[in-house]
Length: 95
Image 1 (cartoon, helix red, strand yellow):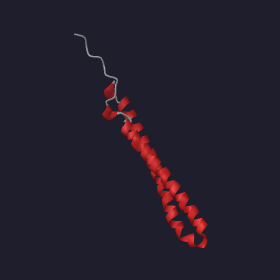
Image 2 (image 1 turned 60 degrees about the vertical axis):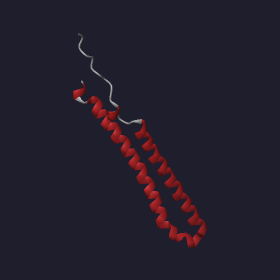
Image 3 (image 1 turned 120 degrees about the vertical axis):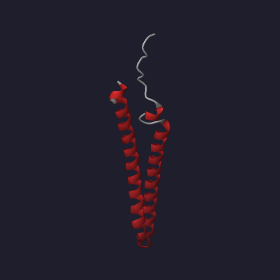
Image 4 (image 1 turned 90 degrees about the horizontal axis):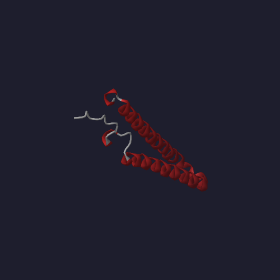
């Protein structure tokens, strides 16, 4: 009987990113874009309102900040998944 060949595949549970995880990252990026667009829209409305729109400045800054944080979180998730996949693929036990 011939010895078993080593398995060079990565099981789905240890893959760098499954399609569902990639969709999750894309969803976060979509939400970041929506938040950014909402912030820009609020900024435009505040500018149109003139003096009466000055009260919009703090909420607009918060919305734009939330958009940036969401985009950063999506990037961190993607990098963490890639690093975990690379670690698993190059782990000595897989050689």
